[in-house]
Length: 496
Image (cartoon, rainbow, N blue to C red; front, side, top):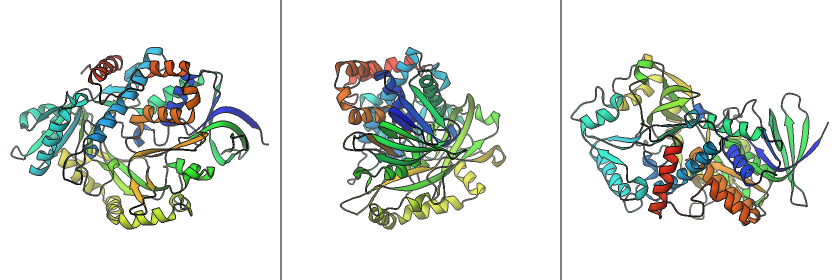
């Protein structure tokens, strides 16, 4: 039996992106009717789940891949600045939600965890010092510290320095008020808050089968309950595809011209997880290193203290691998089925120009546990094999798009794709992902609800939700300092 439900907003996927957009729209206009559809039996169980997500509040403090060398051999810091400012937007929105009671006490989803970058060897120590000198000059990074003193580093990160040759050339930078975010818990809190409203509904175990735009501009979306195979038709004014690795397939089903040319390159991963509480209690930071040559951003090695569902965890990795699945709960045919006439050329070109990456991923996938422990010992020299076990990480689908120069380009960031009429939008890509969800979803509002956003009511509400809205945190030092003081206090990130 087919029934038709009419809603203003259809959110496909129950991850951090959909939940953030739902929370934003719900506060901007509480009259909007919303439906969230999720193919799994629980919320935030795919890419947003804590074990499938980095958990780092990505702010550019410790991630060296956000400050690459440019063509002239100079360190480029613009991406680190923009990511830092975008994360500050997330902190502002979360602060508002905590203050308003829409989110629980901060420790339930975010905790202060210093962010460190750690390198060894003459060339990398020189790079880190130059990076520090450049970033330290900017007000967003004014609190960053640098040291190449062995004793100082031992106080910053005891596990990393235990058993290390004191003659080894090492260095690190540190920002004390870095954060660890349990995006799964955050997302479930958002959805629980939305469920308290009469005009929000959640359907679990439902999959989107068809999307068709009607002549009136609205969308006719057919969903199927996976257990009974019964279908329903949703009449939606706006559709957001926040389905992680599944967003590309759904965007292709929509048939909008803007979807043409996009492809996906899936990457899998694994963590080494510590099972020794005595080891865990000596590590209190996130320590990031440099990625191996040719490695994707998601595989930047780090020794990482996490709070997952209220329990401390110590992880190392992730170890990237090759896969053809777009989701943990996906199909091995996902990659093949994503090839369409409109994207086959850029996908073939990317395959041709990225053989080193493919070779690297396959090599990583074939490494055994002993080889992975050897990599861990570069960070933690005294690591014992018996103290660590392997856990699967999530899948990430990197963006492939058309490129005038090479015919196809592989990108590791996130990209918002929306129809010209603003009736449908999708978020593709992976890094820095969940950390900048608020900034990304504000862009959805700007593109797809622009008429309403121009009203004084929406403008005032947006400024309340994100006080820096419409202003530049990278250019306005006084505003950035004021905003940061508020968010650090509200979210209890300055309590170390």
